Image (cartoon, rainbow over all chains, first blue to last red; front, side):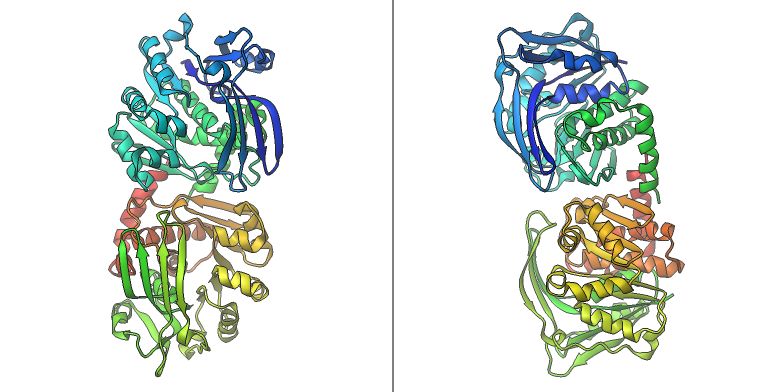
Length: 300
Length: 300
């Protein structure tokens, strides 16, 4: 089954303790699509400026990623994110944010995307997330991610999104911020009450939780000794997870548990290198190999 | 098989977001022994002042804990720890520390303890830890815990301890502090090179790692929604883990993995209440019940 993802395409300037990278192509939609396309066909809906090197997306086209939903704004400049990670890689500082063409973005889903069964709303403005939901015809499974600034600036719109999705991906700190709870278990409970069937709380190198009204699942992260660049880890986690669901075409509890494991493993490959390098040439066989190791590391 | 534990017996004054408790009996030896005695016979070696209510240890005697190794110093005052936990319960501040009788403590192992097969050195002065090792005759499995101040004040003595133990229990932040590494996986590797066969790195609510030269194991913590008081969590974790090893009388990799799970579950009961309350009346059946739940929460 195919997935449509709406999210950002960006230039990233990133500094970590392992070095720096400038003008790396990134954004939530790209990280998600690169991860998800390992498992299932993906269509990207997004916007870039004329400065964006679309030729660099050739590797995605080879992986059956549909790029027709990417609008190119003539004379426009692509969204740019500049950030720095602390020694504790779970903490990062956005030093500069240029929305550029993203500021006036009106998503327009190509006809081919409207019938998608799986929809992923990247961590963009919740008004845009809602706009996309108006355009899809009869989605089966909708997931969304978010980011701190929208929880602070548009909590009510975000609540509307929550009412309409099946699965929310959210960071531990964001979950606590939005719900006003200190415990992420309590936070997850509150989020479930807002609408989604499932909530996945991401804790970075500390693993993740998956909760529904009658299920609780938790795994540690695959231990990566040298985290080089965590940018896009959450998006590639979501991509791996949604990709797995679309591949087996199911979203029951057992599928979601496995999806969390696959998402986590894809993210573990991603953070080992800068930008998209860690998953650009990744194969399903390599993921399955790491899954075997992970099983042996977590079985008792 | 029986375990001898050397460590502190204390009065604890604790403040958490859930309230405060004063004059609670505690200390690493008590937390450890209460947990370990759920699985195997334990002997405590330690020191208290005349002010310590030994009658409050009656519940331990009923659980076959040998208390003859507890020296009572006439006219002396018991060790006292005063601490406060932040909203993030992984962080705590020691607001006052009175060593009292612990300052001049010279451990003297009763004859009955010298032949113990399992030895646990609580997080006390590494010089005292070494002193104890001189007194045990032919221990099979020795584990030690430590605490930040001794890593800073006596790193060389702590290195000597590392050379003589089979298993080290250590916090993530302490492991990074002692080894100068940012990654706890790298830190664990350095610690293994210092001597122990196994290193267990405790990450509080984020779970734990167990590593040896050829094995890596990690589990999330059992999710406790309301952490009331984390005091003694590390000691009761160690108690549950060592207790399990002594019960099955083994310390191979598979046993250690299970030991980590049992230790983690005992600690999950402990933190649900103030002081020792959470494990004082705990039974093995309740632990096995929680193990079933934990398995279902972590299986995929």
